[in-house]
Length: 206
Image 1 (cartoon, rainbow, N blue to C red):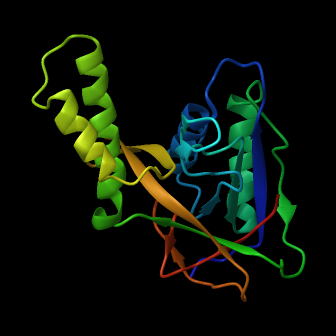
Image 2 (image 1 turned 180 degrees about the vertical axis):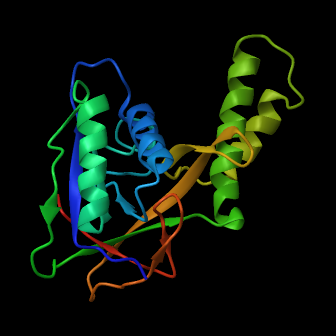
């Protein structure tokens, strides 16, 4: 079970020209490579994508502009030193903050299982195919077949974090679900990327 004594908040600065998802990916790669110790992640502004009936447009999933890392004090202080040295021009509000009392709301960030990931994956594949058709390129699906499949796929996409695997030397995405928990905090285990295992939660700190 991981010890959580405090947290840091890293807020993406506007006007840097970097997408926050790309920036947070680089930040967490540095933290993980530094081997500071176990930590838990929070993206309090994360939202799923989906279709808006009001504007009839597609909204992309987003991590938001705030990344929070929860861990033991020693781990957080090490991360603060690392990030302030390398990302000072891109992030603000990076300092150790102790947890004070029990927060009313908790968040659980859990990785999606394969059967949960499939609808979002299909939706992305269909969008790529549609772009090929619109560009006049060859596709294994006709426009009508594509529309039929689109009608059978849900419109909500999960937010995801881009990570790098040292074992495979490849980058990949980890789609996740943000769940708001109003009951008592759930202490537990987090995986090597900082996502919840067995329903472990972190405090909601806006």
